[in-house]
Length: 204
Image 1 (cartoon, rainbow, N blue to C red):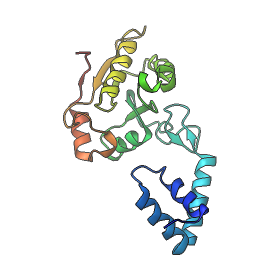
Image 2 (image 1 turned 135 degrees about the horizontal axis):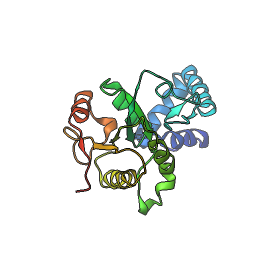
Image 3 (image 1 turned 90 degrees about the vertical axis):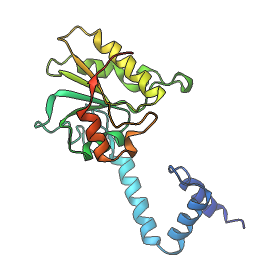
Image 4 (image 1 turned 30 degrees about the vertical axis):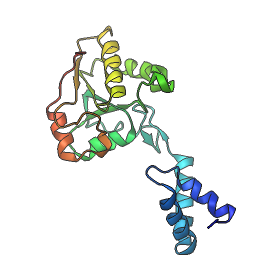
Protein backbone atom coordinates (compact mmCIF):
# COMPACT_ATOMS: atom_id res chain seq x y z
CA UNK A 1 0.00 0.00 0.00
CA UNK A 2 1.26 3.46 -0.89
CA UNK A 3 0.49 6.39 1.38
CA UNK A 4 -0.12 9.94 0.28
CA UNK A 5 3.01 12.11 -0.12
CA UNK A 6 2.42 14.04 3.12
CA UNK A 7 1.84 10.91 5.21
CA UNK A 8 4.90 9.30 3.67
CA UNK A 9 6.89 12.46 4.42
CA UNK A 10 5.78 12.32 8.06
CA UNK A 11 6.80 8.67 8.35
CA UNK A 12 10.20 9.40 6.85
CA UNK A 13 10.66 12.30 9.29
CA UNK A 14 9.84 10.09 12.27
CA UNK A 15 12.56 7.67 11.21
CA UNK A 16 15.20 10.20 12.27
CA UNK A 17 14.49 9.10 15.87
CA UNK A 18 16.85 6.42 17.23
CA UNK A 19 15.43 2.91 17.08
CA UNK A 20 12.48 3.88 14.87
CA UNK A 21 12.21 1.75 11.74
CA UNK A 22 9.64 1.80 8.92
CA UNK A 23 6.93 -0.09 10.83
CA UNK A 24 7.30 1.96 14.01
CA UNK A 25 7.26 5.20 12.01
CA UNK A 26 4.12 4.09 10.20
CA UNK A 27 2.39 3.21 13.48
CA UNK A 28 3.34 6.56 15.07
CA UNK A 29 2.28 8.60 12.07
CA UNK A 30 -1.12 6.92 11.72
CA UNK A 31 -1.75 7.13 15.47
CA UNK A 32 -1.03 10.85 15.58
CA UNK A 33 -3.08 11.66 12.51
CA UNK A 34 -6.05 9.41 13.21
CA UNK A 35 -6.38 9.10 16.97
CA UNK A 36 -4.47 11.91 18.64
CA UNK A 37 -4.36 15.14 16.60
CA UNK A 38 -4.17 17.16 19.84
CA UNK A 39 -1.15 15.14 20.89
CA UNK A 40 0.39 15.76 17.49
CA UNK A 41 -0.10 19.51 17.87
CA UNK A 42 1.37 19.43 21.39
CA UNK A 43 4.37 17.52 20.02
CA UNK A 44 4.83 20.15 17.30
CA UNK A 45 4.62 23.03 19.79
CA UNK A 46 6.98 21.39 22.31
CA UNK A 47 9.54 20.52 19.66
CA UNK A 48 9.47 24.04 18.21
CA UNK A 49 9.88 25.64 21.65
CA UNK A 50 12.80 23.35 22.44
CA UNK A 51 14.48 24.15 19.13
CA UNK A 52 14.00 27.87 19.73
CA UNK A 53 15.05 28.04 23.38
CA UNK A 54 17.43 25.17 24.15
CA UNK A 55 21.13 25.75 23.51
CA UNK A 56 24.37 24.66 25.16
CA UNK A 57 25.53 25.65 28.64
CA UNK A 58 28.37 28.14 28.34
CA UNK A 59 30.43 26.27 30.92
CA UNK A 60 29.84 22.52 30.58
CA UNK A 61 28.22 22.45 27.10
CA UNK A 62 25.23 20.30 28.04
CA UNK A 63 21.79 21.22 26.74
CA UNK A 64 20.26 24.12 28.64
CA UNK A 65 17.60 26.82 28.36
CA UNK A 66 19.78 29.25 30.32
CA UNK A 67 23.38 30.44 29.78
CA UNK A 68 24.45 28.25 32.72
CA UNK A 69 22.71 24.93 33.29
CA UNK A 70 21.34 24.21 36.80
CA UNK A 71 24.39 22.05 37.62
CA UNK A 72 26.97 24.70 36.70
CA UNK A 73 24.93 27.37 38.47
CA UNK A 74 24.80 25.36 41.71
CA UNK A 75 27.49 26.64 44.15
CA UNK A 76 26.98 23.58 46.38
CA UNK A 77 28.68 21.28 43.88
CA UNK A 78 32.23 20.10 44.55
CA UNK A 79 34.49 22.44 42.56
CA UNK A 80 37.48 20.11 42.98
CA UNK A 81 35.94 17.49 40.65
CA UNK A 82 35.45 17.76 36.89
CA UNK A 83 33.92 14.81 35.03
CA UNK A 84 34.28 14.55 31.24
CA UNK A 85 31.47 12.78 29.38
CA UNK A 86 30.64 12.37 25.71
CA UNK A 87 27.00 13.46 25.56
CA UNK A 88 24.27 15.19 27.59
CA UNK A 89 22.59 11.76 27.86
CA UNK A 90 25.69 10.44 29.65
CA UNK A 91 25.61 13.42 32.03
CA UNK A 92 21.97 12.80 32.88
CA UNK A 93 22.62 9.08 33.40
CA UNK A 94 25.34 9.90 35.95
CA UNK A 95 23.20 12.55 37.64
CA UNK A 96 20.38 10.07 38.19
CA UNK A 97 22.66 7.97 40.40
CA UNK A 98 23.04 10.92 42.82
CA UNK A 99 26.51 9.54 43.52
CA UNK A 100 28.52 12.37 41.99
CA UNK A 101 28.45 15.98 43.21
CA UNK A 102 31.14 17.64 41.09
CA UNK A 103 30.92 19.50 37.80
CA UNK A 104 30.95 18.25 34.20
CA UNK A 105 32.33 18.93 30.77
CA UNK A 106 30.41 17.52 27.80
CA UNK A 107 32.46 16.76 24.69
CA UNK A 108 29.42 16.41 22.42
CA UNK A 109 31.15 13.48 20.73
CA UNK A 110 34.44 11.60 20.73
CA UNK A 111 37.58 11.59 18.65
CA UNK A 112 37.03 9.75 15.38
CA UNK A 113 39.47 10.47 12.53
CA UNK A 114 37.43 8.30 10.15
CA UNK A 115 34.44 10.59 10.69
CA UNK A 116 36.56 13.74 10.62
CA UNK A 117 35.99 14.49 14.33
CA UNK A 118 39.09 16.08 15.85
CA UNK A 119 39.98 17.90 19.10
CA UNK A 120 38.58 21.22 17.89
CA UNK A 121 35.18 19.62 17.28
CA UNK A 122 35.04 18.48 20.91
CA UNK A 123 35.93 21.82 22.47
CA UNK A 124 39.10 20.40 24.00
CA UNK A 125 40.82 23.81 23.99
CA UNK A 126 38.02 25.10 26.24
CA UNK A 127 38.33 22.00 28.46
CA UNK A 128 42.08 22.57 28.91
CA UNK A 129 41.38 26.19 29.73
CA UNK A 130 38.98 25.08 32.47
CA UNK A 131 41.58 22.66 33.82
CA UNK A 132 43.88 25.61 34.48
CA UNK A 133 41.64 26.48 37.44
CA UNK A 134 43.51 25.62 40.62
CA UNK A 135 40.25 24.58 42.30
CA UNK A 136 40.03 21.48 40.07
CA UNK A 137 42.00 18.70 41.73
CA UNK A 138 40.63 15.61 39.98
CA UNK A 139 39.75 15.05 36.33
CA UNK A 140 37.40 12.10 35.89
CA UNK A 141 37.42 10.62 32.38
CA UNK A 142 33.98 9.12 31.87
CA UNK A 143 34.07 8.62 28.12
CA UNK A 144 32.44 5.38 27.02
CA UNK A 145 34.56 2.21 27.12
CA UNK A 146 34.78 1.92 23.33
CA UNK A 147 37.80 2.23 21.04
CA UNK A 148 36.94 5.85 20.26
CA UNK A 149 36.10 6.61 23.89
CA UNK A 150 39.41 5.19 25.12
CA UNK A 151 41.33 7.10 22.45
CA UNK A 152 39.59 10.30 23.52
CA UNK A 153 40.41 9.64 27.18
CA UNK A 154 44.08 8.99 26.34
CA UNK A 155 44.32 12.21 24.35
CA UNK A 156 42.73 14.30 27.10
CA UNK A 157 44.92 12.72 29.79
CA UNK A 158 48.07 13.42 27.78
CA UNK A 159 47.15 17.06 27.24
CA UNK A 160 46.06 17.51 30.86
CA UNK A 161 49.36 16.15 32.19
CA UNK A 162 51.26 18.75 30.17
CA UNK A 163 49.42 21.70 31.67
CA UNK A 164 51.44 24.14 33.75
CA UNK A 165 49.40 23.95 36.92
CA UNK A 166 49.46 22.17 40.29
CA UNK A 167 49.45 18.35 40.01
CA UNK A 168 46.11 17.06 38.71
CA UNK A 169 44.73 13.65 39.65
CA UNK A 170 43.37 11.91 36.54
CA UNK A 171 40.99 8.98 37.00
CA UNK A 172 38.91 6.75 34.75
CA UNK A 173 35.61 5.02 35.49
CA UNK A 174 36.35 1.40 36.29
CA UNK A 175 34.41 -1.52 37.80
CA UNK A 176 30.99 -2.28 36.40
CA UNK A 177 31.28 -0.57 33.01
CA UNK A 178 31.38 -3.31 30.34
CA UNK A 179 33.74 -3.02 27.39
CA UNK A 180 31.85 -1.46 24.48
CA UNK A 181 29.00 -0.32 26.73
CA UNK A 182 27.28 3.07 26.64
CA UNK A 183 26.82 5.01 29.90
CA UNK A 184 23.38 6.14 28.79
CA UNK A 185 22.04 2.57 28.99
CA UNK A 186 23.67 1.41 32.25
CA UNK A 187 21.67 1.07 35.45
CA UNK A 188 22.26 3.36 38.40
CA UNK A 189 23.90 0.72 40.59
CA UNK A 190 26.47 -0.07 37.92
CA UNK A 191 27.31 3.62 37.52
CA UNK A 192 27.67 4.12 41.28
CA UNK A 193 30.12 1.20 41.45
CA UNK A 194 32.01 2.63 38.47
CA UNK A 195 32.43 5.96 40.24
CA UNK A 196 33.43 4.46 43.59
CA UNK A 197 35.93 2.17 41.86
CA UNK A 198 37.54 4.75 39.60
CA UNK A 199 41.29 4.44 39.30
CA UNK A 200 44.22 6.73 38.57
CA UNK A 201 44.35 6.93 34.79
CA UNK A 202 47.32 5.48 32.91
CA UNK A 203 47.90 5.10 29.19
CA UNK A 204 48.59 1.39 29.50
